[in-house]
Length: 183
Image (cartoon, rainbow, N blue to C red):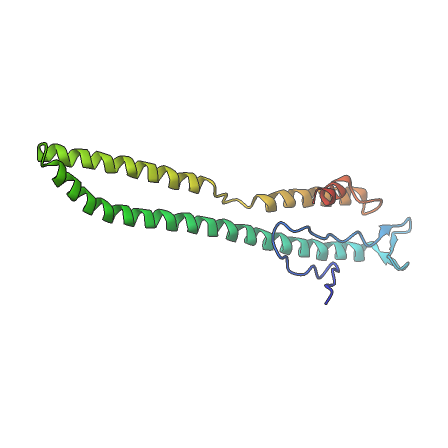
């Protein structure tokens, strides 16, 4: 079943890295205030601006969907990092209690008990520091801002400004064609 990619129906994006379809301007304004449609019919400028409004509405809806997908992806990464840190904390706590007593009492056989417990405590502080550094490194890899959506929104604004400044006539702007080539 083929998807109809008209200005009002883009279809649901599969992933946020997929190329996007942008409809070409439907008409260019003529000297008499009317524009010729793709099938040769003249349309008033008001109808073109109405069509532009509906296309911008669809574009904004798709940008919101893209942002949601990016945020969900980053939230999933954050949840995995949090789960690893939580499991590490619980296991480290339980293990440190059991092993600490065993090691401290074992060292207490050859040195004073206070010094034995201090050595074991310092050892566990070092291990906890290493685990903390690993968890912090994973958290730093998370990008809470949807970078791709911000970039495409900026590109869309540039294309819209260019289209409005051209009066919706002439070939597509250089920004639009550069974006399509970069995909």
